[in-house]
Image (cartoon, rainbow, N blue to C red; front, side, top):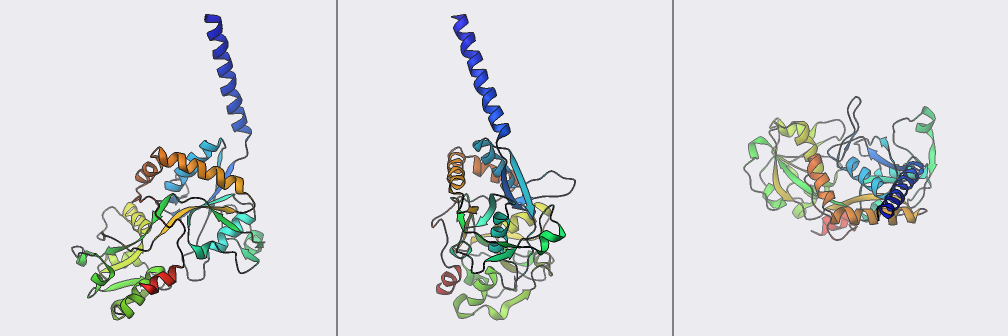
Length: 310
């Protein structure tokens, strides 16, 4: 019996060693993440990489038996930026096989209207990389792993205001970034009823949340994750969450290229297992994210049409 047990133990050990060896030889799972989108992802010089998407990407790589390699990139907050084209260019150039934290909407997943695009600035980019135009592929999404709604955030003078719908913002001094989704929602609400109360700031130049924190304005409408990031960086902030979520929101997931369907299938399997284990919600909590599970529809339809119709 002891001999049989010894043989079984050796066999098991050899199996484990073989699995480890295979994993060590496996190509890395290359995931592109935004370097400045806490609490989803953050890459700071001299500090460990952190964020919900970092932890989730590592868990998926572990499920697939592959080492993880993160390609950090920078998204500029301006009206000319195109996250869809930038993600496609990174994938099509082979900088990564997946882009994480991608908003799953119909318009961000359409076949691009142009054949080439430039990549965003990324970690390790050369001058030539910044000039090159990349031939684009076709994007395909994974299943979603987090719901990302718009939320009303209140300044210190309006912190006790009850917000159950956009109409409850009437009478408040509103501030919004030009060209943003929040801008479209507020400007078109009830045939423009709030227009005279809205001040527009320039994205990437003006400090929206800073102005709200100072009490210059009473309320804004922005992505929930952005408020989470501000609250994490400024625990003593004077602005507060209203608890209201605009009913039109987008799920976030991974996006890859249609030329590698096997990877998306494997990632979906891993996401399903992690969700069933309660790990994804746990990762969100650890990162300081107000985690909301994905909602139907998995891919949001025409956002602007939905807003106008409300």
